[in-house]
Amino acid sequence: LSLWQVVAGFQRMRQEQRSMASKAAELEMEINEHSLVIETLQEVDPSRKCYRLVGGVLVERTVKEVLPALESNKEQISRIVESLNTQMQTKGRELNEYRERYNIRMVGEEEGAGKAAASNPESEGGGAKGGAGVLVS
Image (cartoon, rainbow, N blue to C red):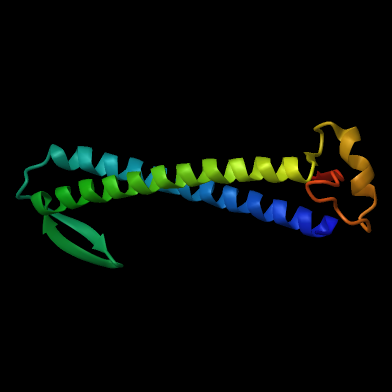
């Protein structure tokens, strides 16, 4: 692989991990919103009317119909967040292995080790044997 391919691969993996973290944070906010609504509805008369947005359409239901659906949705979202966290940990291990394999150093981290490779972008990046350093900002 060339130096550019190594850097592009590393940056792609970092972006994938960032997007997973972003999605997990977004879903955590949804869980919090579900929790607030569930807490509020538990204190209300079960036969009281409430409105729920389903696929962009506002639907009239009763609290006793909506509450179980909200609790079920919250559980499903929680499972998705757990799955995303597991995937992020796996991606983190892959990133660390990739960094070690291609001797990738981040800017500010042992700066002297990777500057020679970063200053010569024409050279081919070393594989697992070559050990040419790559500096990524």
